[in-house]
Image 1 (tube, rainbow, N blue to C red):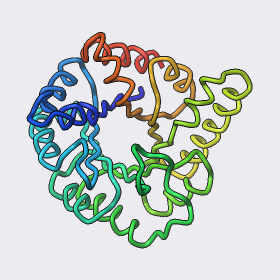
Image 2: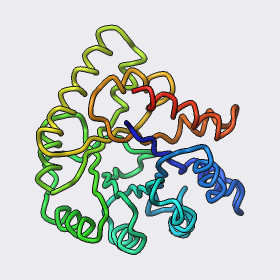
Image 3: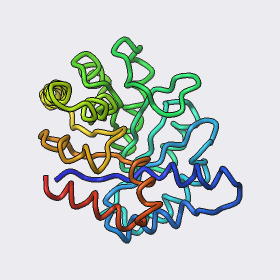
Length: 246
């Protein structure tokens, strides 16, 4: 069954907009656990505009008693302080994502022409300390093969193009689903597990999960936006019903 990993960055974004400690990232994690979420994702950026370094450790402490059932995923670009953070925290998974100057959120996966040597060393370093490594890529053969050559365990398919195609519907949606289906098959053929994330929501997730072999979906913005109106526990339960039915 596909696992849901709740990205809690937007809780930190709201907290940081006012200063102080409200809303509490730790309290949000506890609510996710109580609702049955099987995964928590954080993405600490270099400028700490949402998740801060201290948050990463506090979340790890909350998850420690339930790590047998709730996975911890740290996303980020492989800058030195992020590598050291993952080394110290030892999450279940680290998702390596590229960062473009000035971006608000991730805009694309790793290009297939990205030099491999330094990244491959980081992948090996993480795997040697028991951290599963996922690499954020577009649904294309070349970057998937590049991720396999790095020694990654999984790829996370960048799903914003799918979300835009879902909005258009019809032939655009059919073509997008076929593209992602082929990408999933290519990843599996290259020995990779498959995660997915970016702009997935309650409307488009059921259709996306018609694809086979999706191990995990990471969802933050849409989930937490809806939680403002129905509550965090209720919206997590809505998502869990979707992944449980696939």
